[in-house]
Structures are given as structure tokens and as C-alpha cells.
Image 1 (cartoon, helix red, strand yellow):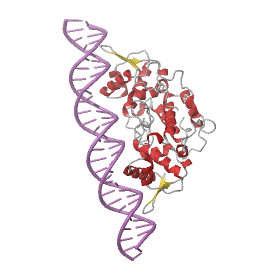
Image 2 (cartoon, protein in one colour):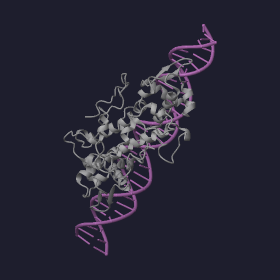
Image 3 (tube, chains in turn orange, cyan, red, brown):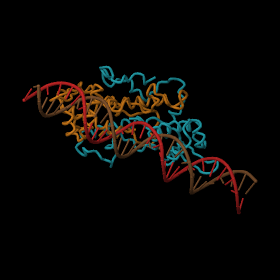
Image 4 (cartoon, helix red, strand yellow):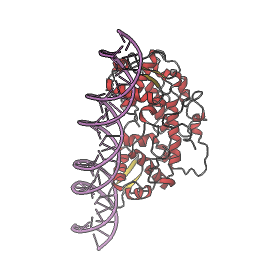
Length: 172
Length: 172
DNA sequence: TTCCAATCGGACGGTTTCGATCCGATTGCC
DNA sequence: GGCAATCGGATCGAAACCGTCCGATTGGAA
């Protein structure tokens, strides 16, 4: 339940790139220097992000990368999937890779699919623009608006949270 | 962004235990046979779950485990944390383990904390009782209704997804 | 009371994946 | 036409994960 260091680096680098502006052309060396990510690793990441279609690459002198689309159109899920592969909490959720020993009669699998969708939805609701914005002012993050609603009536679960730690209290 | 096989096994085993009833005493051998988890691995998991306080263990002949509290009071996050440790998408979210090279001036960290809270909240809202329930009827799970709302217009890739894995197909 | 059998708990090694590095291929500028 | 800067793929070391084995503990039966 923890994303790899590479994905973490990718998020930071993409946020730095977005802060430079969507139209500017950036080299891996520059972003590596800004973010502190080792240069070879940064190059590998940029290449993988470009392969996923999040960046456009240009070779040769003066080449580099730039965001393929606006920061609003790139979600955190996109970045993570570009680096780590499809977001699937369990292998059984990933279609066509059902190595699960329980195979078909697993009682938990349908529930896990829903949970997986919830996690993925949370990640997909966060755009790169939000990540790149400097959080000086605690402005309401609209992408996570469903978080502020109490998980009780309506969209929440009808039972109390076990150890009392809810979603509220995270937002500043 | 994928939980380990051990956590997956733990969820399945806990669901099986909950389906047996909260009061019944269960041995690791029984649950291993039911779930298909290898017995030594099952023993290791049960021990770890007991150490986390989710199960109570009794040694000796006729011993075994049983749920420490009702299935309503155990969340998916509890199980995952018992096996994998604290849920922290990035190391910087986990307090007092700030190995991040960016240290204090990371612009992304506060946003990641919110996202981490969202993921954790999603996992914490799912109780073991829900996981143990047999989903014979595809009843709409109201607790995750926000999933159906599209986070953005055109939430997917506006270009052909690189590895062909899209969002559709996860929800039943 | 003594023995036994069933169970939990900790320690060890094989395997896969991850993370960082190096070198070749390609392209624009001089 | 040469050069320099950059991307892209291949390689290697390391860590974590996963599975297995053996010892410690306890309740029941004789």
C-alpha cells in the first residue's frame, strides 16, 4: 500500500515541470537538479512518462521534454500508472492475471474491486495542477470535494469508523 | 500502489473468519484449508494479526484464534496496517521518517498528505462485515457512490492508452 | 500426576522486483 | 560536415518479499 520511490520521484518531477509552465521545454538535467532526483533515474523516469504519453520528447541539442497536455488534464493516477503500471491493489483485480488460488469462488473479490475503484478514483481526482500549486493558502481543493463530506448519510458507509480516525481532520 | 500478497491473504482469511462468526474459535489449519493459503504462511499471518490486536490467540490443544471484536469494528485499513505496517503512500507522509531529499521545501508533500488521507479513508470505510458478506445480489454499494461521478470531463486518456488498460471494466 | 498431542511464535534461505548506473543511438546547431 | 547535447535501452547490485522449517508453550487424556 505504498507507491515505489520511482513513482514518488515522478510525481515530484511532473509537479516541477508543471510549475515551469506547460509550454516550456525542459531537459532531464534541469529537472533532476531542481528536484534532487539522481540524473540517470530522472532520465529513466522521463522516458517512461513520455512512453505513456504524458510528456513529448525531443532529441538532439536543445531537445528535452514538455507536458503533452495541460496540467489540468493529467491526474495523479496517470503518473502512477505510467511508472508502476496499472493500479490494481490485488492481482485478481487486474484483468486476465487471475493467479488467485481461490479462482472463481472468492467471496472477497467483488468487494475488492470496488475498493480498488475507490482508491483509483481518489488518485484520479487529483490533477497535476493541484499538485503543482503552492499551498500557501488553504484553498478548498475541489478535486477532493467528496472528502469533506461526512461519510455518513448518503455516500458514506453506514457504520462508525472503527478507530475513530475519519477523513475529516486531514484537510487543514 | 499494490498491496502485498500477504496482505491479500490476510484479508481473505479475516473475511473467512468473520463468516464463521465472531465468537467461534478457529485454528490456522482450518482457515488455511478454507482459503487455500499455505499453512505456514497462514500461521505467520494469524500471528501478525494477533499481535496487532485484531485477533485473540490461545495456545495449546484446542486453542486457536478468534476475532478480537465484531466484524463491524475491524476495517480493511486495520488488516492492511497489521500486515504491511502503516499506510503511507510515500515515506515523507510517514511521520519521523523523512528521508526525502527535498526535506522541507517540497511543494508536493502537503498535497500528498491529503491524497494519502483519502486513500486511507477509503480503506478505513470498508468494514470486515462488508467484506464477509456474500454479494449474491449486485446491490449498489452506496458508500462508494462518488465513484460514479466523473472527476473531470474526459477522465481517461484522450489518446489511446499506452498499455491499453483503461478505467472501464473495473466496476461490475 | 505424568505424558502426549496440537498449536503458536520466531528464525532462516530462495526468489522476484526494485533502484541506480553505464553506454550506445539520435538529432539539432555551428 | 563535424560536434555536442540529449534520449533510449541494457546491465548490475541490493533490498524486500514470500515461503518454509524448527523450537516453545499449553490443555487434555491416561
